Amino acid sequence: MSDLQIAPLTARNWDHLAELFSSGNPSFCWCAQWRGRGRTGSREQAEANRALLRDLTERTDQGALSPGLVATRHGLTVGWVSLGPREDYPRLMHSTVLAPLDERPVWSIVCFVVAKPARGQGVGTALLQAAIGYARDHGATTLEAYPVDTSAGRVTAASAYAGTLPMFQQAGFEVVTTRRATPTSRPRPIVRLELT
Image (cartoon, rainbow, N blue to C red; front, side, top):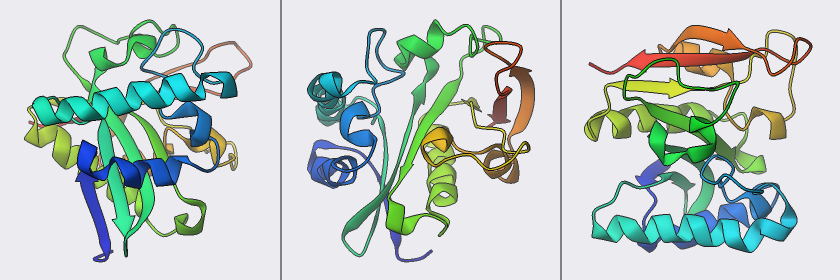
């Protein structure tokens, strides 16, 4: 995928991300689900979610970590991955299903968005590899994610926003536990990759 360019989100490439998020489910989510504690998944919250991500993006100019990575190909935005230290995601910190496993400092990968025309072309895998490199370069020692287990059959693209278990396993992540919200809900694996 030599024509794919992946870079941290900054104020300089914000328009690229806005282009990707202007269509489909991200148009109201703006990758805010795990970053807030209140309602973030409704269309009424779209502008507040956008402002939250924009604010995080502008902080990168003052030396803060980027909230994620943007993938472009031939000038078009084709993908996004959200990652950072687990404590950057308040909802994740307070989740019952995805509650912290231990006291170790971990970075979390929580969301992928791949433009519909680019799906099935390895964009998600390339973003995952870039996320591993970004986390390692910024001092992370353990990387954690919460992918969808597809062993029971296909899932919709909207349900696979956290990535799929096989994608993470192929990148070297190992399942450290599996949890369920209810006895009948789909199992949710928690995977880790040691970076040291």
